[in-house]
Image (tube, rainbow, N blue to C red):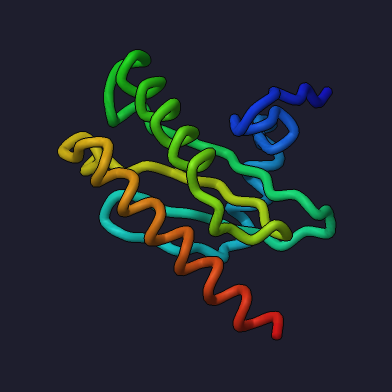
Length: 124
């Protein structure tokens, strides 16, 4: 079931929601990390990217976790430097609670740019 949202927002088709898909990407064991995020990636055949976002219960209550998910989705919507042939699973770490939105954005964009740069160089 894929719903498309008009505008620049993330489309429903670009969201990984099934636990089996999360497990498959994490099992693939290709990841990039910093102090605030771990991003697992897996190459695929389709020509559109997909993201899965996971905020562990250690980080806070459901209100806090959903706020962080909304912020991360907004950062992804505004960022255009990611590889279209990859699936991403973004897992936040507890240290993210000490950051403001702009710092979360900077850290996530840095990792996404790093992944994009390395994958473009690998596939040349």
